[in-house]
Structure formats: structure tokens, C-alpha cells
Image (cartoon, rainbow, N blue to C red; front, top):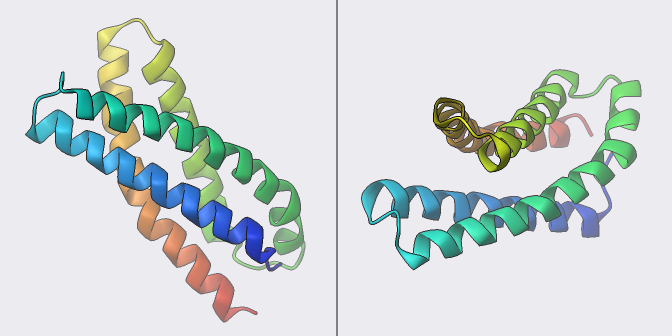
Length: 133
């Protein structure tokens, strides 16, 4: 099922902002000075954009996924996209609320590695969807 253009563009824009701010934070944190104000700024943008992305993902879940699932289109890639968003949400929760440093450290690596992997995964899902129209 094709998404309305406004929802599609909003989702892509929010995903791009989440990705860019996440990569910026990684660069500041691992290549620069982690306590730098720019790293904090990137993280604040990342968190805000992620909230918007989750809101839009909820709309996609209700407006897009059931129709595509019933039409048997892109089930595998759509399942991976949904599962990836779920794990990213869980690891973000752990990063924010977990008290143990080992848990936070593990969640951090999973979160940023999966976040980077989400970019090509989302792209593949979109390309496959366009092929099945």
C-alpha cells in the first residue's frame, strides 16, 4: 500500500535527521571530545527527532503495514524494518534509563550499529516496494 506523500516525506525527513544527528554524535563522541557542547547538542536533536520518527512510525504501522501485509507485499523487509525500529527503541530506552554501566555500554553499541544498518535496510524496503507497485 502506497503511503500518502506528506507522510512519506515526513518520515523520510525525520529519519534523515535522526541519522544525521546520530552520526554527528558518534563523530563528536569517538573522534572528538565527548564532553563538548556539540556532542550534547547532537544528542538532543537526535532524541527529539527520534520522538517524531516514532510518532510517524506509529502512523505507518496503522496506515501502511496492514494493507501491505494483506497484499503479501514486502513482508520480509517490512518485518525487518519494524523489528529494527523496535530494537532501536528498546536500546534507546536502556541508554536513557538503565543504571548499570555494562548494560548502557552494550545497549550503546547495539543502538548505533543497528542505527547505521537501518539506513540501507530502509532503502531496500522502499526499492522493493516500488518494484511491486
